[in-house]
Image (cartoon, rainbow, N blue to C red):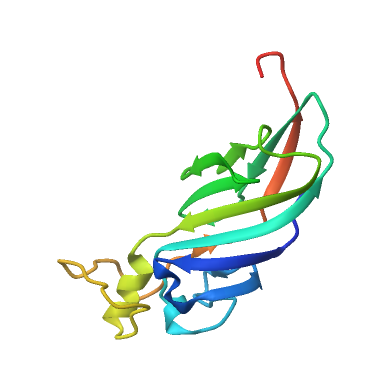
Length: 165
């Protein structure tokens, strides 16, 4: 099951003037941001929070897991304002059984990426916001950006509960 594709998105620190409602806001591997080419977004590093609503028919004897098939780099997940955990390694999945309920539910995913893209922007004279610095030249080959954000549609995986659960 997949929550609907439309997400409201807010970026921080201090949102940098970025607020949008879009479908899967993210930097793609080809370095194009799906919502535009503004430098404040293209070179963004920090936290982006995605929110959406979904409906589900909850049944007794089942467990519900939210899977993020492609997220960069660290994500914290809330369902109905219940903190369901942080994911930073594969399989990028949290148990949402105790948070989800029959009917309308709210999903919030806060994704934080590395400093890489902001430093690339600063090096190119296109910093996404003031205050970007490092005490050494950023040392990666080339000038490409790293994919960042929620890059694939979240999936709710449903399993039969075991006796231990």
